[in-house]
Length: 394
Image (cartoon, rainbow, N blue to C red):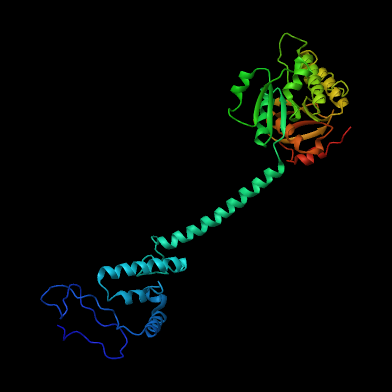
């Protein structure tokens, strides 16, 4: 059998034939142990062998799907003459060292194969390397975004505190929710603490519920508002009943008490939720059904108008918002904003009224102005800066 095996001529290129699996060599026929596999080519000096490997790589290249784990074949040739266990140990250490230094896209799915035409999905080294790069890039972006937010928060300083009177009312609650959503700290002034706790989310550090009754005078209101409040929004409203004097207690005297409390504390921003048609008599709307209906309950519109006049004489930076008929439904249409004593009909969602009140805090164009608002489906959408800016001071 040995005589039939082809031999390698001196200086001939190409690998020598290897014994088939399980075939015994001529040197150990009696022991039945297979001879250690011989290298494909004879050992040559290191420099010559390296040149030979580079030639093979140039000949076969990527088209033969050969091993492109550069340097690994050299280590395998060097260790092929060692015992089996030592051979595996050295080969493993070679793979580890190469994996640590090779470019990710040159690492094959196994040390003995590599396909460029159809990469293997099970290639751990390649996928992990790409995932690591993506994670590093994403992590960098997240870090930069977080740093930007932190810097903005640091520059912005602590959140502004806004006191809301009538915070559990239909409009007042929406104002509180929108203030919290925009990053304000809120003091919710309510008459019933238990009702307020049930109405608002619990464990919100930006929300403080305080007892406040606008009919109890400015001294107690000043204690509830506190010196840390920078603005007051009045969204109070009387409850219809048999007390015909209730509108004056709440919409007139109550508002005046809030204004006086602000003057004592030095709070120089006041926003009042009023109503269109408060000055209906001067507008020639005495026979307007809405004007008649709203004044049935103790001359409500007259009480509101006198409160507005007190605010305008106080010297406090004010914005008086006069909405049309209030709806509890979600907004329909865009906000239409007009100067005082202009609108005498129309309606608007309470959500949009709350939005206007909150946006007035962020836009200096709203200072010392009375605005009337309704919503119309055919109206174009306009920025609040433009809406407030279109109203002239009087």
